[in-house]
Length: 128
Image (cartoon, rainbow, N blue to C red; front, side, top):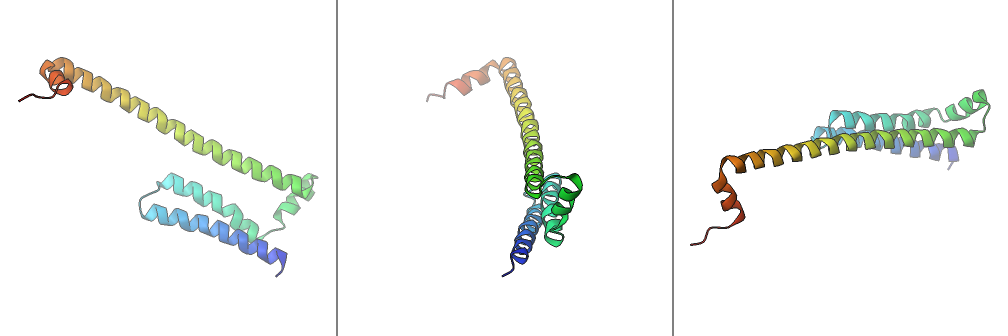
């Protein structure tokens, strides 16, 4: 089998599976729209490279760097951007969880101060 054909089939399979996975998860409401869009944007470069594999070589020739160096830089930057985006999402969610936890603790404390009998009921079970 021709190596270029194998590479193209691999890239189509990988990019297509990312797109199909994003659409399936979006349809089953397991993935929000912005995350599905992130997966679609992850899958598109692989599909583009499958149909135009010489694009990296063309860019390398015009930038005056070696093909492998440009490919390594491109993949590294791509992965760093994806990791940065995912860490940003996790950080925002962590901040929201912390704020919600603090709000619940404040509300519980206010309820305990307003109703002193509720604290006794919570801390000591009823004895019959």
